[in-house]
Image 1 (cartoon, helix red, strand yellow):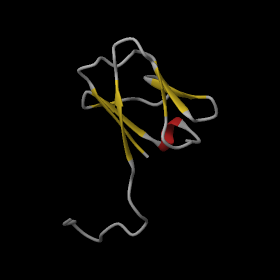
Image 2: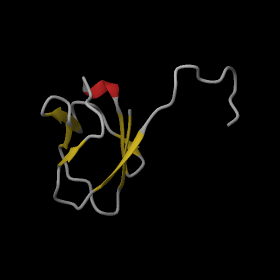
Image 3: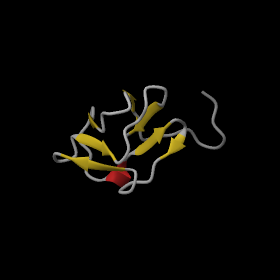
Image 4: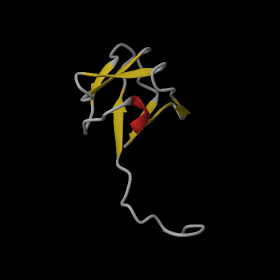
Length: 79
């Protein structure tokens, strides 16, 4: 992969895809996360604001959205 400037030296980001159904608001995470600001969440191509659009629950092992993602939304989490 080509980069402008130096290539990353500290590894790679991991991506998790979620499948919404329009009613489920809580999903398990692939990794335990310490805070909402440690992940980037995109729903339908729109970045979600930590603490407003989603929160972490059960010690950072699950994500809870304030509004359920629909089945047509592509939901991604970057760790």
